[in-house]
Image (tube, rainbow, N blue to C red):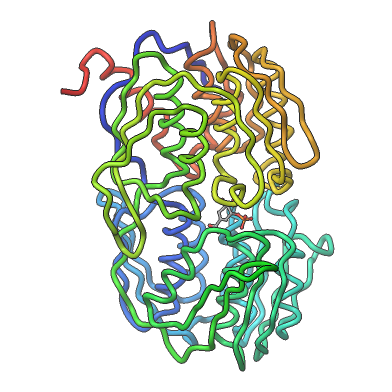
Length: 442
Ligand code: S3P
């Protein structure tokens, strides 16, 4: 439990947020499958990425992690070098959907059987979306307690290339099929209704795999050719825009604020939040735009702004899916109505985020309504401090910590420890910006 107070002064200063979660996972996964050593700089030492490291160690990969420097070294054993996990036989993916689903794709191609399990939330989340394509490729995947949920028993096989039309735009599904496709007997194609984050495609290409993306009338076609090997490459992980999102929003909401967020990954398949907040009136300037490790990166200068409501829907949704809870907080502070459509995926994240966001906004005095695939938020009413139910969901805890900055009175988060999933130092970083409020940036 943590008690938070309204910001008494502007947020000012500079901040480097931790490394990107999605890129950190992939750097370990592809590093493990590559031939030789991969050095990963600015790795995110959050619980989810540590679950990925733990699983690959159990699959026989040596991985050195230096928490102090944020450097991780993966000693890859090649596409055919993984070993069956023995002690314990079961791999535990914790709270991490990315670890669970992408590992399904890797394990589908291994000549051994693995049991994959995770925490209570993971065992509720839908796995059919990866079971179906991987089964069609030739693997056998069985839900041990419930048909389409973890724990899963995965028996790998020689795989066939497929063309798979995914009903959801999901980078986890796409990446699972791409991983399996490395081992298939022909090309594999995933068709997505909208383009989800493309970190796997970028990284696989950089390691020598053949991956192409084509936009057609009926969707995005992502095709991978089977590979004999992946080469190695050192990877510099950009700062996570999903973590920066909390401070971008905080700076926009707290009067007088001005923050410089350094080294933020702004891959267009991830940066929809910037488009939406700018459309809402947010003053956000990209500085020092550059490329780092195959990903676009910049610094973001954010100044307090008066926001107004907007409509968020369609192809933009996958580019900001994890940021919708904090965008909803921005919408609560904005003048007028914000409507979010096409975001039914929020219902199957770490928590049902449509329910958790609307419930907590309502308890802070905001008029918010849940819809099957989104929400409607009537902004502009003052927020008041409340007891926030985080539902063990890191993004709910951090979003409502931001809301607390503009809420009258005290806001209590029922369990703030879940921020360790993606941003272990979140509250310390937030406190540092409050402290430096009295020392404006020169
Ligand atoms: C992720 C993909 C997204 C996202 C998740 C991370 C990834 O999930 O919500 O936090 O790293 O591939 P979906 O693939 O379910 O959309």
